[in-house]
Length: 117
Image (cartoon, rainbow, N blue to C red; front, side, top):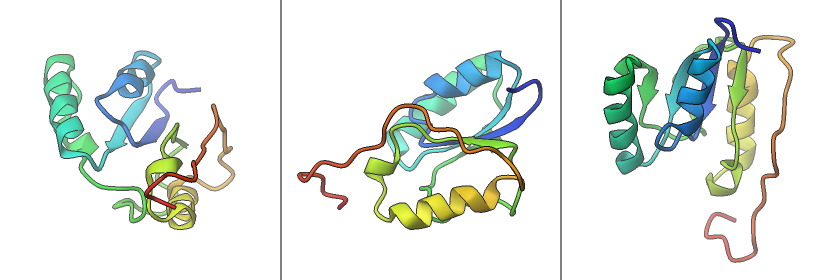
């Protein structure tokens, strides 16, 4: 895992996973739809040397990347927040290189009170 793998982080928030994966040698690209979280992530990136071009303020339903561009995708506790889960998952699969492994960490859940159901 890593050692120059190109990893897409879907729902990067303020950067916890971003900098953890970079410390393992991954080349990371981050998407995050929340403008405030992106602002914090960009501030941290400036301090830590992550290129701004690798941070995208967008959601997971229409990823602005080529088919098969990423070695793997990190998407943890995100699907319960997207409006169209099927589209988001289809986009994740589309941008992963053929024969990439899907790995699930933790659980994705929706409550009956979620506004995104």
